Length: 111
Image (cartoon, rainbow, N blue to C red):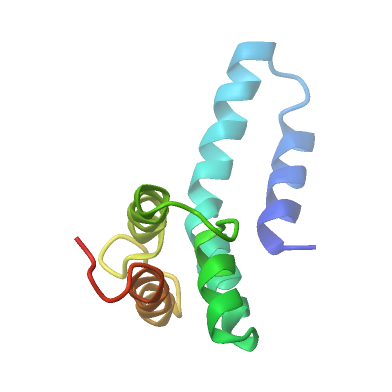
């Protein structure tokens, strides 16, 4: 079980006495704070796959995805794992993997 999931479950348990909307707001804040570190770990875990499968798994795309969906996935994920925005250990390596995956799928013509 990822550490982020355990943290969210613990936080949800501690928020048990709050009202519905306030509880949802607090849970969203907790998840948003844990998501970048989790994404770095997920991207780094894709290193064991072959090159084609690795690129698809890193960007969470299906085979045959359009160039626009590759670009969109790259932009979304690069904001989460970029070392300037994410201070998690391994963020620089994860960003390099994301960039390489997008470059591989776009044929080296990243825009």
